[in-house]
Length: 300
Image 1 (spheres, one colour):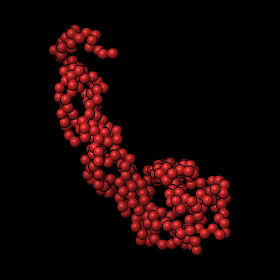
Image 2 (cartoon, rainbow, N blue to C red):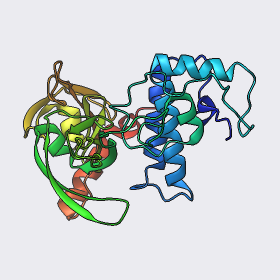
Image 3 (spheres, rainbow, N blue to C red):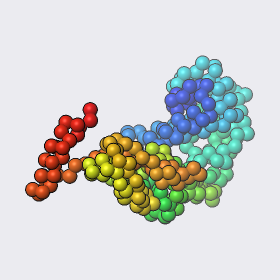
Image 4 (tube, helix red, strand yellow):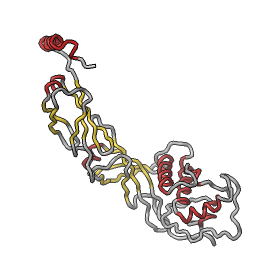
C-alpha cells in the first residue's frame, strides 16, 4: 500500500492548528463535493479530503499518524505496517460518516466497516452532506421558510422546506439533522449542512450585518435640505438631509441593518442626480441657475 500525506492533501502544514485543519477541510469539501463540482476526478478528491480530515481532526489519530510520518515516508512511497502494529488501536468511528477509506488509513486506525480480525463491524452513521443554497436577501433579513430542491450524485432530486433564521449571513450554515447520507445496517443518517448564499439585490448590499444603499436625490434637495423617503429591508423610513449635502455623503440609520444580537445599521450614500430638462420651462430654470451660480456651481 502507498503512504498518504494527509497534510499535503488538505494543503496545510504539519504544525497546523485544529481550526486551520477544519477550515481547509471545509473549503476543499465544498470545492470537490460531487453534487456541486464539475471538476474531473472530483469524487475521488472529495473522498481523499474526507479521509485526510478524519485522520487529522482527532488528536489521538493525528498523533498516531504523525509517528508514522516522522519516519520519513513520502506521498506514494510503499508503506508496510510493522508486524506488531495493531490497526484500529481502539479508535472510535461512530461519527466518521461513510466508509470507503483507503488500505493505508485502515492499516493505521482500523477498517471500521470492513470485516476482519483488526477491523470493526456494525452499524455506521451516514456521512454528513454539504450543499449550497441561494436565498433572497429579504428572506435572510426576516427569516421564514424556504423550499429548496437538491440533487444527489445519482441525479435524483428532493425538495425540502427549510426554516431560515432571521439575520442569517452569507457563508453561515444551517444543519438539517438526518437529511444526509443514509447509515448502514439501520444506523442513523448523517446531517445536511446548507451553506447560505444570497441572491443579487438591485438596491441593497451587505457589509457584515450593515446594509448599504445608494440614494439618488435632486440638486435642490441637496442644496436646500429636506426630508426624503428611504427604503430599508424593514420598510420605508423618513431621512432628513442637511442643506448643502454633496454626492458621496454617508448617513446612518441605526439598527436598520441585519438582525442579530447586535443589529447592523443601514448606511445611505447620497448621489445627486440632475433630472433632464424636458420642457421649455425646465430648460429656462437650468439656464437661470447657470447664470446665477456661474462657475461657483461646480466644486473642485
